[in-house]
Length: 146
Image (cartoon, rainbow, N blue to C red):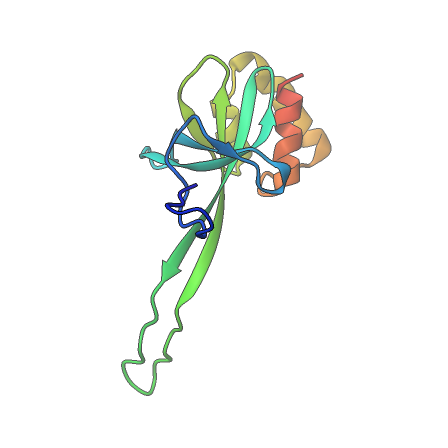
């Protein structure tokens, strides 16, 4: 966190991989990760699961869309808005690369070890888990770390 003078409000978070903060009791730290579009990006990720084989992180990304004026009386004006996106990232122990986990069962299975694919596929089917739900994503990664 960056504050130039004592008593001044916090303006931004430092981009230092050694620092971490704990909002709501969850560890948040600066990481380099690869998005689903193969772009290497830096940002703050919240740690959801720290396991023996896989770690799971969450990124909340907010996009601002500027307002657009009405071009004529047939088209409505669109107000400015913020859109919130939640992305999940995983890191395998011993590997420095951190990849985005898309909320699709097939995409998740491609990222994990071949030895765990069948058991994970069966676990997903038996428990009818929705990978778009954070709690279900956590359950899957806790299963992978057993």
